[in-house]
Image (cartoon, rainbow, N blue to C red; front, side):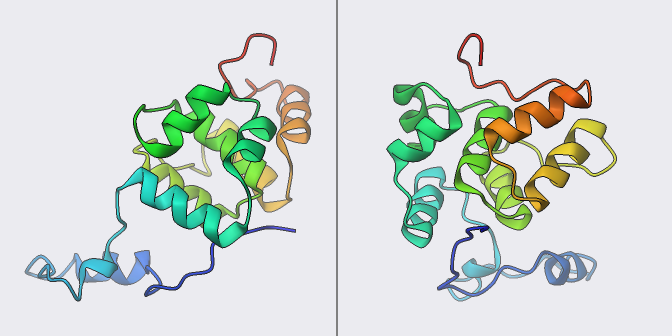
Length: 154
């Protein structure tokens, strides 16, 4: 079962924003329109994600196989993690592709791209509900580099 945050805000629409950005002027920024943009606050993003999914940070960090202290630090924004760490968190939380891409955007980690073989494998795994263990086996089978969790031998 794929868990995803339940939006209690205005739904962000990337395609609509891309269309607006083709217009002659940049969209005016006001309090009412601030919900049109992704909030780059990592802590707030994860707080909302955990509230929406009902998961715990400790359980996700364990399932992501990330160092406990470091996991808490990258989720509260006091340290910046590698892209693979956020992807491990995504797989531990069983996030859908849209939410994973938003996590990567909020953490300035770079979106998954379907034409890059490793990224394509990650997208496939997300779409098929893989956990971190199944993902590891899948990437090895494809002769691709597994996610780095920062833990030796993982």
